[in-house]
Length: 224
Ligand SMILES: Cc1cc2nc3c(=O)[nH]c(=O)nc-3n(C[C@H](O)[C@H](O)[C@H](O)COP(=O)(O)OP(=O)(O)OC[C@H]3O[C@@H](n4cnc5c(N)ncnc54)[C@H](O)[C@@H]3O)c2cc1C
Image (tube, rainbow, N blue to C red):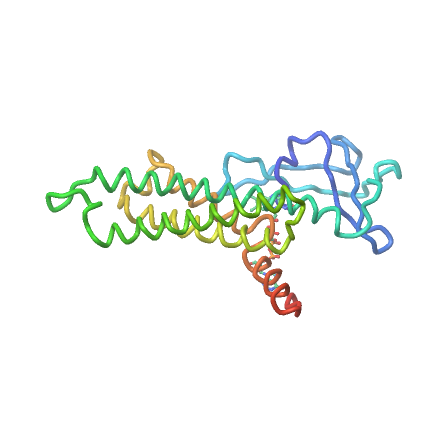
């Protein structure tokens, strides 16, 4: 379930166990026993095709097995790259929501003044910008460590977890500042908010990243 672009792809990369060990396999579109119907009914990431990959008596030739892919290390290396990108993407979503909220707050007049002049609105804007700046600095630092080959996956987990959590919080705060207009597609806020709900779950859920960082801090795995 939940495979992005599965219906569109000519080749699927599938991680599966052979004799109890995880390996990567290439499965071509049209192979007997393999179908990839599109999943419907999503309220989030609606612009992206999400699919269910179904394998029913699907036989894969030995040459379709990826070399040097024994165990979870290979898929986790891919995930680590994607999670690093997501940490930046979440900052971008948060910035779009902040920009929309700031522009709206300066132009929306209530009680004879722009709502940006009210202390409660300013507190929200300050909190949003502070969290965006912290997320940018965290991820910039990761990028520099990545360039030097010093980046650890636990640090990527911290950034993905933090940035997506705060981007969602910022999207919700922006929606509050926009009042009723916050639910309209005229503004980008509700779209980012709905999409970030998926981002919070995919590429490692918020909870799983908590456990990864928790294990790194304590040395004690708490997954089960
Ligand atoms: C739009 C979209 C696109 C996706 N695209 C892809 C893709 O291309 N490829 C791909 O492989 N996957 C993809 N996914 C799947 C995504 O990675 C999974 O949904 C995610 O890993 C969570 O798995 P799950 O949905 O089975 O949740 P579950 O594992 O059932 O978890 C449900 C809840 O329980 C919590 N939980 C589970 N175990 C524990 C534990 N031990 N301790 C504490 N809490 C726990 C989870 O954090 C979560 O909150 C996509 C998902 C979405 C929404």
